[in-house]
Image 1 (tube, rainbow, N blue to C red):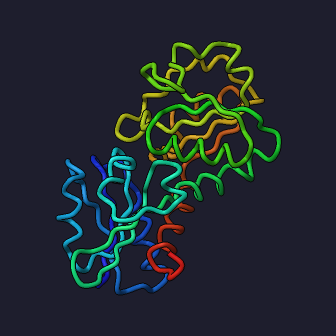
Image 2 (cartoon, one colour):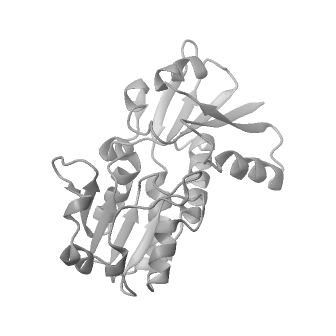
Length: 249
């Protein structure tokens, strides 16, 4: 039996196990399982991968950056972004070899490219974690300028208190890369002035549980185009499966 799974903490919000279990059933894949591994300490990763049946892992909040020092190799694109959400495990003689990849990049691009076309020139990226790094990488590849927002003031970021009318009016795309609004705290939302939003804005939330977050609902009520995190979840998951099973990786 080949094992795959998700590492993060906590994992009550995740749909990954459901996605892969349904995929295995739908496609008649009988020799694979997918499990959740809620690790309080990412340092326990090496102990986890001592299970010789384990072939690949997804990495989620809060470990997409913290996991990098524990890897043996990292894909150049993931290294450039500074975030890993897929680990491929290769076993030879001796300890398993762990290689990190980033399928979020693929999932984000696949999700927003059909929606924004060539109309978006500037974006606002809420958050400073591993997912925000992937979003910023994708935006740069599309020649879209972006402003990054963090709760705390630090180089390269503005704070939520700095987001004024001018900033909101000058961006077309606003991306939430934070866990704010994620199950079970579904009534919370990023701290921006939603009354400044209108039909010219596109809101994209990487949170997929719930699918229609309060962030997106508030935007939709004001005429914004809204993009849920569901397509990204599916796209990055399928890319993970390709990475685990293809000789290209």
